[in-house]
Image (cartoon, rainbow over all chains, first blue to last red; front, side, top):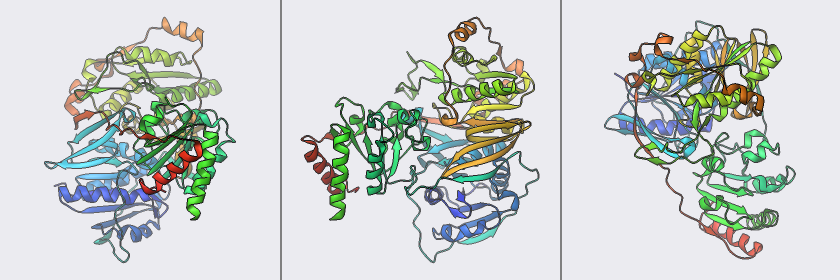
Length: 329
Length: 260
């Protein structure tokens, strides 16, 4: 009988990413409604067990260490084998991953392998009459789908930022810690051989609590220095519209919108962004939106909580000065 | 190289879809190639230009998807195949992947298959990895760079905090991101040539697919509702001279919103 929720932790080496704590938060609410334990599996190479410390502080029922030299480098095929074997052995009602690049790379392959229902990038999971029902933004966020998953197990990836992180208590550990031996029979045809870290003093765009974003109205790549100054003052990430990225003013990784990143910060400051539908879908779930644009008819003002109609080159430096002033008080 | 590109026909991404009675309003909707699939097609054509070979586009969809397929063909692909059968209607992504895998096998030998990272319509991102699983070949998602060396490829992906390089045995499925390349425009000559092109249509019988194994029968999810997103309440425009407006904005962010 399928029972409980199995979380596949998203790790960088043996360090759990912030999203893993969010996914554990989601798992806990599902497990409470469905019954059964929250199990967290650490899939990776030797040493991955170290992640059990911080993850155990959430007080989950079980941490399963599935380490193998064959899993030291990420490979969709080997990780599919591991998750399939973990799922078969534990019979969870739901398998949860974070909707990160690795999560969204491997989860659909596991779904295909097991022939089970899959929902990607969900923002909410409910249990209604014993059935798992997920909420998913579709059509680039222009529609919200509510989808019931009929198979047991089913597999779901949870959107970063959708759930608060599970609270942690120092000194707490998981109910139990077990090991699981994964059997990788075939060498994978594709695997990671190198990681090129992009070092940044700024927070990751998809995890930042403040984002300062610039659009075509910024005029040039050089003018983004103004955006960066305000961002650094606020401890914010820098975002950009597609037009800006296409023009080569900013790297692709900063693109917010339909084919870029979806962000969910407490504060989103849009500078010289008109607010095309493709951009709005990437940021409109921000808690507060500020728009600075010289065109009073710009669609961005329709979603902004606070707007200033004016020349961004006048307003933005004034804003930076004012923030400096209040920060120093 | 024989390169396959999976192309999906989606509602025009530049237009806001409207929702009524738990479905999108299709009246007057234009159908376009999924944006990520344009990057796939571009990459396939570049590889063909470098190594020779053939680029075949495969689209699964209703008859109207032929127009989308032709739009992509005009970028410079060689062949297009429309996979279409009323029996396929209502299939879930896993069934779609099985049907596409059957079409890929039917069209002959292949070295590389491109799919989009995800469809901008339903945003599941299943088809690429699931086709690879059905064909028992590797896949790599989130691809931003491809370098082919004989029977292997060095593939760059975009991940949290940086980029990863994967060594990949071919054939394999790669799913394209938007920053993989900048797709070219179709030439007038190609657009004219494509107009006259006959697109073969393959159905369940052509692919040896049992209609009972696809379509609504095998679907394991139920759509409970499809609704518009909650509207954001209209905010306020802060009036006044720029320095006054900025002061008021910062005050509001501190005292009302409490976000700085």
